[in-house]
Length: 255
Image (cartoon, rainbow, N blue to C red; front, side):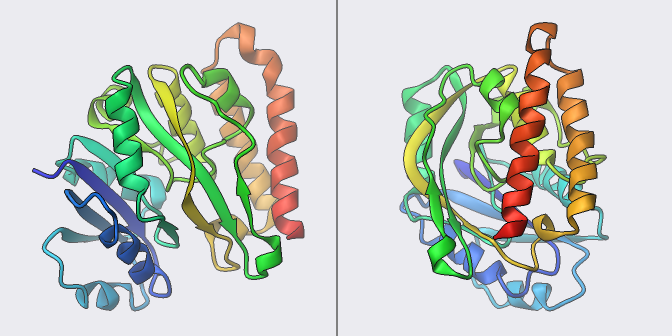
C-alpha cells in the first residue's frame, strides 16, 4: 500500500487537471497514489485524465455532488497512512509531500502538517507569499480567527486523525475545508513546514470567485457552525473572525 493517498476532486477541470497531477508526479517523495474523483464533469476532464499513463493514478466518476462529497468519496477509496488533498486548479512545489511527511514523523503528537501558501494572480505583481504566522501545536483558537491553511490543497494528515474526525460536511458550500481543519485542530496538534509549498492560482473560473453576496452568505453559515462547536470561552473571538473573513473576501474581489 502507498504511504500517501492524494485525493483530487475534479469538476470541469480540463484546463488545470494535468498541471495539478504533474505537480504530484514531480514530488521528491514518490510512494503515493492519486485518487481523482470526477464530480460529474461535463467538459474534457475525463479525456485529459485518460491521456495519463501512471499506474499510481486512479480515477472514479460520480454524478455531481460538490467538493465535500467528492473528498469524502476519495477518503473511502484511500489506502495510504497519510492523506493529502489537492484542488484541481492548484499545484505543489516538488518537495511538499517529503517535507510535510518528515514534519509529522518528527512530531508524533501532531496529526496535521501544513505549509505556507504562494498566491498567484494573473497579474504577477499581485502575487504574494503568505508567511506572516507560525502557528503550531494546539492551533484551535488561532484557526477560529482565520483559515491560515487557506485552501483544501495544503495539509498532510495522518489517516488516524482523519478516522477520528470523520468526513467533510456536504451541507457547507464555502469554507468547508476550514470547518474540517477546525475539527481536526480540536483533537490534534498541527506542525508547520515554514516554506511556501502550495501554489494557489487565483482564477476567474474558480469556485471562490463567485458572486460576493453568495460567498458572504455561505461563509456566515460556516462561521455560525464552527462557533456553535467552539467552547464558551472562545465565543468572544467570533466578531474578530467575521472581520477577518469578510475583509479577506472583499480583498479577493478587489484584486
